[in-house]
Image 1 (cartoon, rainbow, N blue to C red):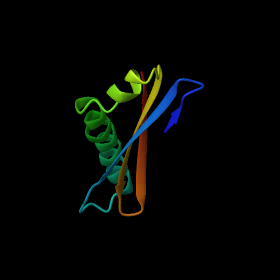
Image 2: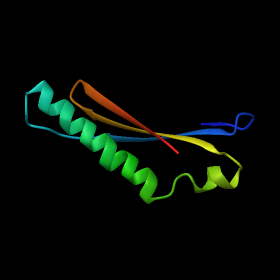
Image 3: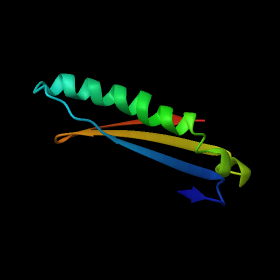
Length: 79
């Protein structure tokens, strides 16, 4: 998503994980780690923000979301 007037862009990456645990706490910990390392990591590693920067976007927010069963964790990173 891009707001050219505000020079703001938002990037999203979604991950789905399979887990055998029934512990809600463990599922949420695993989801948070996955959202942070795999989802945000992929945005950084594959440089999804390069085109936004070329277009003059200076405020970039990155969101990583991970899903498992009925649970979701979302992590935000701003540049």
